[in-house]
Image 1 (cartoon, rainbow, N blue to C red):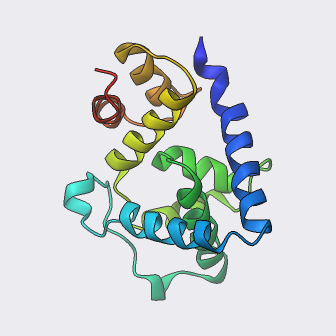
Image 2 (image 1 turned 135 degrees about the vertical axis):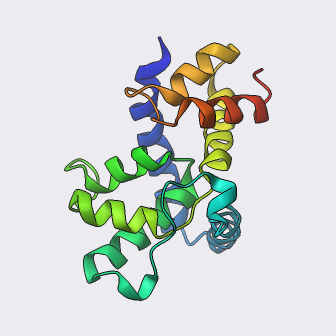
Image 3 (image 1 turned 30 degrees about the vertical axis):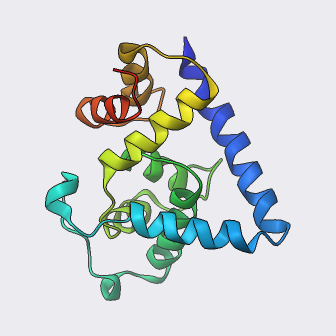
Length: 161
């Protein structure tokens, strides 16, 4: 099963992105900023977000730092809400408190459907997946942790279904 791909894949993706950034890849950084602007939608109704974005002025210092980290991750790869919170709060990740990571992620107004499509395209660029297999990978608690609806959207947009 491809569920084991997630952590190894993310590690390779992060290492590659950090390597490009360390080499002074200004074009890559510029492209990443444009991609982040595209990914970060403030239209909560269209995203199916559970909560309206929190005002940036009401975030604590650690939450503002977590926002910066979250934006960096979203520049590099697609993440689900739960996957991004886990990445930010994990001791193997950034180590933020879960409450701070959650507040940070919820303040962004991210379009999770578009992130699911981005993740699906990333998976398909590495390996072949059936429609149902890709939806399972994207929605599994051992995978990317998207909702089934988001995973289905992502798999369809990536052309797996």
